[in-house]
Amino acid sequence: MTDRNQAKESPEKKAAGIYAASLVKSGDAVGLGTGSTVAYTIKELGRRVREENLDIVGVVTSYQSEAIAIEAGVPLTSLAETPRLTLAIDGADQFDENLFAIKGGGAAHTREKIVSMSADRFVVVSDPAKKAKTLSVFVPIEVMPFGKELVVKSLKELGGDPVLRAASKKDGPVITDNGNFVIDCAFGEIKNPAALATKLSQIPGVVEHGIFMNVDEVAIGNADGTVVVIKK
Ligand SMILES: O=C(CO)[C@H](O)[C@H](O)COP(=O)(O)O
View (cartoon, rainbow, N blue to C red):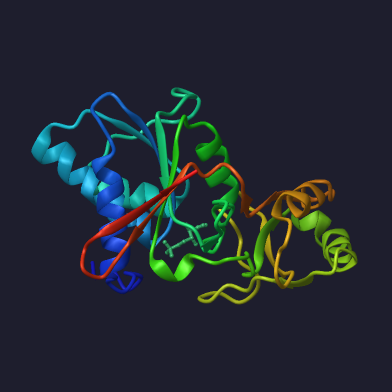
């Protein structure tokens, strides 16, 4: 079957994704994030499993990553079976100099946060465009449909500009893998991501927001195949 959902090839994302796969060793339990960058990691891990007898298990964060991992031949497990992961690898929508990150462009940030917080080490894979002095992209917020109105009101009171994310190939809102809505909320420049994260978590109906404060390192791929690693 032709995959019409295939993302455009990106040499920067590929360099970062393949580099991150080289960090994985036999015996590791690896959290596998979601998105076009970490897709390169998952495929490379599959190659290493097949060609280098790499002995690993992965925990996926979305149906999309599950499909890629199965196709690539990466053995999968669950957090129920393997609650502690050696390493988690994932993409991001933006990150700053303190390695605070915003994630959830693929609406998978709730599972991504659970999986990355279950790991001893969290590596973000990125292209250079995601690096920012101050976080400023919209913050994806997964919301229980029942609580949408209260969440929208509360986000406006925090100075945000919330928009319910619409699906691109379906009428109506995006429904996450957990059966919820996503609200994308612009806050302009986020001077204090930790304070905003606390306020967002306190709103009833918010399942999880996309501000991540647990990134240990970011691998930034370049078009020439080189990778720059920034560590906390
Ligand atoms: O947070 C995410 C999914 O929820 C992705 O990791 C993020 O959107 C980056 O995606 P990509 O690697 O395709 O640029």
